[in-house]
Length: 336
Image (cartoon, rainbow, N blue to C red; front, side, top):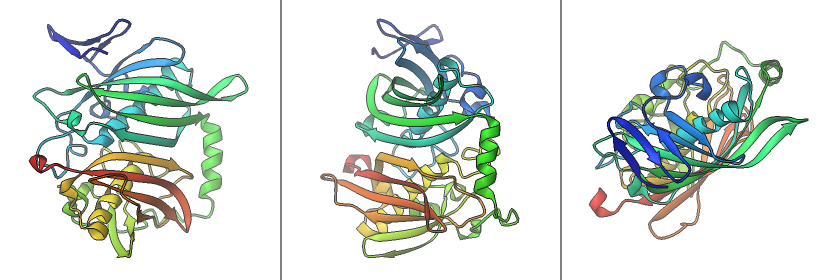
């Protein structure tokens, strides 16, 4: 794939079989977003039955994704995760026939950043290319109801990393029945299990703004740390529209912040000196607003020089709702 070409105000990427535009976003309903400013995809091309190439514009400044302790502006790896999430939903609707009203479930994802320098913010918004291969589909009879994608990620023509993702979808009536059974016995009067007053200060988890913190009180012992997960349903990015469960992107943030907190508390590494290079997650059941949520973090053997990794288990009432691993790389001294 050749680098992004900028000509006459029309932004395109040209390959032997692909031309993509970065001029405007795709319809927001096709990526399940209410706010246009939260839509990052701009274009797509289907090259074969198994390959889809998509474009996304990365905002240079964003109230959530730009809020990080760093000596230079960089794109948040979780911004790439959100772009891939949008790409998977878009492919399902545009190319695989998922009905507009169907409800989606995020099953798994595995983000790997191979070149953190590729995420540096420059003088223009970043152009993200998502080269997606359809590796599997889930069917109900002859109807596709789920997909798995392997996505190669390039920022401004430079290979930044990759991400695998699996999602599935279902008709609203099936969703309603599933959620009614899951929520039976919950008390809707307790829709905030942990008080937001217990939020940690932002610098403890590598943030600048307290409203972007999703962790509260914590306890650390040995090689483990447990922290309360806070759910602020007024957050404009994590709750772009009303939901009946804790969204996957909030759980991703909980994994990242729990890892950053544990890096300091268990390993003595300041969040400001770390960058996220890996985030794998499996969502095993719906997270409910009414139940206390805790992230249990365990230090893993170092994956390599300058690397720190943690295994995480997010639980409600002793039941796992998400599990995964995060990996951080130490920033070089010139980057601090």
